[in-house]
Each structure stands twice: as C-alpha cells, then as structure tokens.
Length: 430
Ligand code: UD1
Image 1 (cartoon, rainbow, N blue to C red):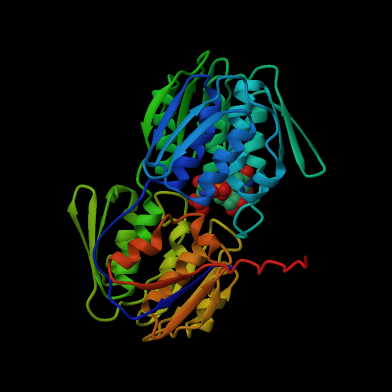
Image 2: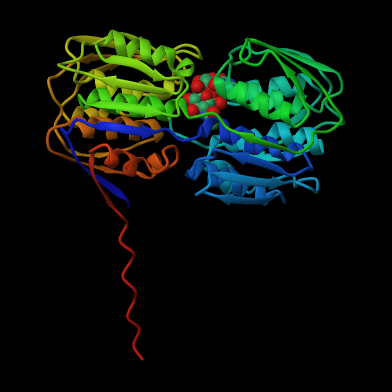
C-alpha cells in the first residue's frame, strides 16, 4: 500500500501551477461518444479517474490515445459504441455514469451497473433518470443494473428538484441529439457545466444558458469533430492556495480562474489570509500570524464547494476560535474528521455540522485517507503539523491530484512517497 511521509511545519513559498480540471475532463471525455468524428481534448490531467473514463470509452469500442505528458486525449468513436461498459469500471468511479446520456443519444440503448465513487454518501441517480425519462427514455432496474432504452429522445421541459451536477451533464449531453428543444430548469451552474456546453457547441451542438439555472438545448441531427482545451481545476487550485495559507507560507498559484473561486477566496480573506490576484490567471496567498475561525456552509455553485470543505476544515483546525462547518451537499462528508482528531484537532460532529475549536498546532500521526478530498485535507494538515505524518490509503489522492507531491516539493514541502513493496517471489525448487 502506497504511503506518504510528510515532515510538517515548513512554510511553502514559490509558484505552482494548477492542472486542467478533473471534473470538466470526465464529462467531456464521456461526451465524445456522441460523435462519430475525431476529437482532440487538451489540458486533461493524468489522474486515476481520467484513466478509468478512458478505459470505459475503450470498452465501448472507441479508439482513444492519451499522452499524459502533453495532457492530450484523442478520441474517435467512429462506429456506434457498445451498450454496456464492464461493471468493474463503472463501480470504480461514479462519473462513469456520465456515459448514460451519450449512449442513449447515440445508440438509443445503454446498460450500466450502479455507479461507485467516493464513500461520501448514498449518491443516488434518480434525477438523472427522471430527466432522461421526461425525454422519452424508459428504464428498468435489475440486479444492480440500470437498463435504458428509447426509440428516439424528444426535447422536453425538465425541472431538476436539486441542481445536481451529474444529472445536468447527463441530460445536457442526451439533449444534444434529441428531436426538438429541451429546457432544463434549476440546472447546476458549476463552471464544469459551462465547459461541457462549450465543448458540445464546438462539436456543433446548440446549447445556450449554461452557467445559469436555465439551459436551453436545441437538438441537432449529429455532432462533428472538435479540438478543445479544458478549464483549469478550481478545486486543485483551491487546495494549493490553502496549502500556502495553512503552512503560513507565500504561494502563487498559476493557471487559475479567480472568478471560479470567489467563495473560497472570500472565506480565506475572512479567516485573515492575504489573497491577491497578481495576474488574470494567478493568485498569491500569504499569511502572517494565526488565522481566525470562520463559519462555512457548502452549497451548489457559486456557494462554497463541498470539494474544498475538508481542506478548509484542516485549516480551521489551527485557526483561533470556534468555527462551524455545515455540509449541505453530501450526507457523509466528515470522514476526514477522525484522522484530524488523531492529529490533535478538536472537532465535534453533530449531524450536518462540525464545530471546530482551533488549536495552535496539529501533531504528526499515522492517518488513513478515506476518500479523495479527505486525502487532500490530511495532506494539508500534515504540511502544517509539527513532526511527521504518515498518510496511508493515499491512492485516493491520485484520483484527483496529478503529481501533487512533486509540485508541493517544488515550493519547499518535505514529502516522501513510500511505494508498495512487491510481494517476495516464491522460491521454487528445481
Ligand atoms: C459532482 C462532482 C463532485 C462534487 C459534486 C458536487 C464530478 C465528477 N464530480 O459530483 O466532485 O462533489 O458534483 O459539487 O463532477 N443527488 C441525488 N440524486 C441524483 C443526483 C444527485 O439525490 O440523481 C444528490 C447526491 O446524492 C448529492 C447531491 O445531490 O447529495 C449532489 O450530487 P451531484 O451534484 O449530482 O454531484 P456529482 O455529479 O455526483
């Protein structure tokens, strides 16, 4: 099992670059199934989740080549794709469910096992199915599988009971080839939705209103080829900015769109960090002295992102005073609390709330990561803690942060990656 050993207490200083967005890359790669023409997608980070999505597309018959050095993916789903990606891939990652909309649009049929992903709640897919059903798809469930079928999707007026990111993406992708116009209300407004819509439009789709709560999609007969560059990863950029603040350092994060991080930057300033936009796509963060506790509530965009809540809580654990963190997006997203407690944090969880009593410092300890963003929170806590922290189950980190340890080392972090020992080979007698 891979582990990270981190010597904490070193203020990070220097410049570091955020990579392309994981959560934009995944639906964009899935959307490639809608077109028979070649697509080139740039700025795709080398992550476990990206590799899984590529494997899903390959399993469906698409020709995919990925150059991690160039962060470039080429996809050609020339023939109509298969119907059923292997369940082992779908269960590895919830985002695999994003092939449902594209498969229904292109094939009129799909069979998927129920998705997996981070252990942060039940994460149902009812809103995806409700929207696609309104467009004329029929679903049956049997033995952990969902089978969808349609004789041709029809444009519809759909109101989402909750602005689910994944449901918005699946419906948006399916609607590109539907007959007539789809109007999606109470849609998610995350920047990754806008990026997906821009990608689809570059392929010839007719999507307007992405980034607002009402998206309008006029169906077209087919989509063509395109070359597209994904947006920078706002969650990774936010994590790096928090690394600067939690260590009392001075970090400039490049390749970041400040508009996508307004809620985080406001909260960091409220906590006493000095945050400046030093260029249109670079943010510098510094802190002198102890930060102060602030209250925080996660919400759909443009509210505070749930994907940065664990990392921010790590910072609050060493901020003066009491903070209240309220998680409204996922029902089980406090799994980072127990390991933070073993590092000396004082946090009490009551339902959707966590009350954090700031300490002057955390202490290095052996801890285990339970999911992607919990792993990021432990990494930040470890960078700030006194002594050495050993993080196990670090595989979760590779799902969302590409080469993060090297980039943190380049700004002064002391991190050692202990790779899994291969099993000793058996001596066979001759
Ligand atoms: C996406 C992101 C994830 C982020 C989340 C919220 C990707 C690959 N993942 O996940 O990193 O944390 O948005 O910003 O982009 N829900 C339902 N029914 C549904 C769908 C969702 O009840 O049909 C609930 C979920 O259980 C959850 C909430 O809605 O409690 C938000 O989920 P959703 O916005 O769909 O998140 P994901 O698309 O899974």
